[in-house]
Image 1: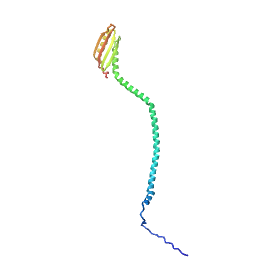
Image 2 (image 1 turned 135 degrees about the vertical axis):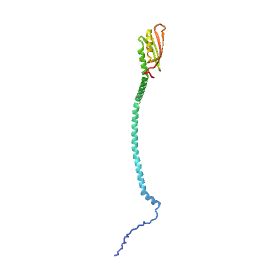
Image 3 (image 1 turned 180 degrees about the vertical axis):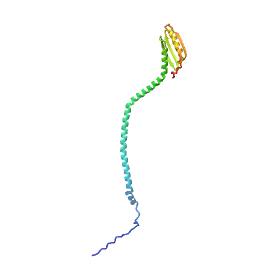
Image 4 (image 1 turned 30 degrees about the horizontal axis):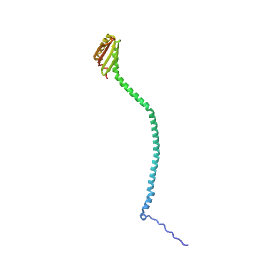
Length: 190
């Protein structure tokens, strides 16, 4: 029998790489595609998937916001007339407050004049413009007018520059008094 010789196993350390022929472009591309390209494709897929998922989430949020806005708009339209009424009422209240503040001094003067007015006389016109007072009164009794005139002239704390004219009615049915004065009361400020 023939004995075959076994080849001895080479043992040793080889620190040199095998020298091979330079790799071609396609070989380099193949190595790159299997290593780095794979990571790029997986990363791009992950980004696309996360964008798709966030798109669904954002669409849902946009739909919720739009439905909430529609509900709030309809609610606001429901209260539109009520708001207009409330604003109009508020403006009227502000106007009333302003007029009340303006009329308080006039009310004081009117009250003082009514207290001075004689019993058997009738005031036909009582007007206050600025600080000027105009009164037209009528009476059958001339003494009532004298009392009226004296009362006005005594009120130096309220009036100054008092001018009074008296005339007799044409049909002798009474007397007419016209009073012009300026108001100096500290309560009267316009």
